[in-house]
Image (cartoon, rainbow, N blue to C red):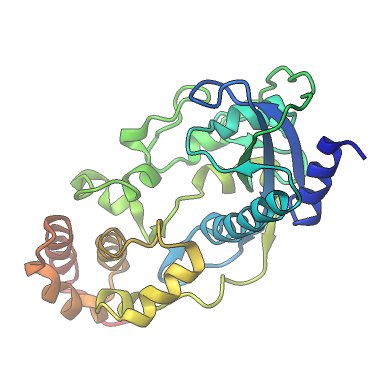
Length: 290
């Protein structure tokens, strides 16, 4: 069996729905072969008072699967490694994984935009198939209308200052005028995914299980943060960032059960947490307990 065929077969055996070879574009690895992968997932059909996008749960599983694949390929004498410089969406499009959506995501004909993309640089001399031309979605406009931050006005161009998800992953306090728009979102948004007709039906019944309670996060329960790290990975579950976002969720809940915890955090040494806590406490001071 040819080496490239073996590599793709190993990726499929590891659980990746799509696997193909491309060449890295730009950076220190420009021109090197890359194994491009896609890990599909179903999003939760229901959410409780604290909402975490199913993408982040799938992302952790895909990360672990890709790490295991990297080790397996290296053990078999096929040198493979991760690189933070890989632009995965252009590579996935060039491999024919799907079309480019207005929401700037790769949309697969079967899995919709619900895929976690990954890549391994291969330090081998391999032939790589000719890259395919980029195809685009029908641009029905559903994602543009559904975006709570109105960040998708131009096709495939995300206006990051208006994107809720981008703010969740950034440092510092969220803009005051955007805080109510976060609603119950702790991590991720999904507005542009849920509204896309190409994602219709790609849900699983009930909420994602095993996630901590909002009050436990607000009170700094270490077991809650440990569970969150195990579910979404340490990078996405950074304590300060999660706590700041949890205060917005609590403030948008209208539930006075979170008021005491919010007041306790108004003197937090992290300025973003303290500011969000004050905002949350002001929102909940006259709210009833649910």
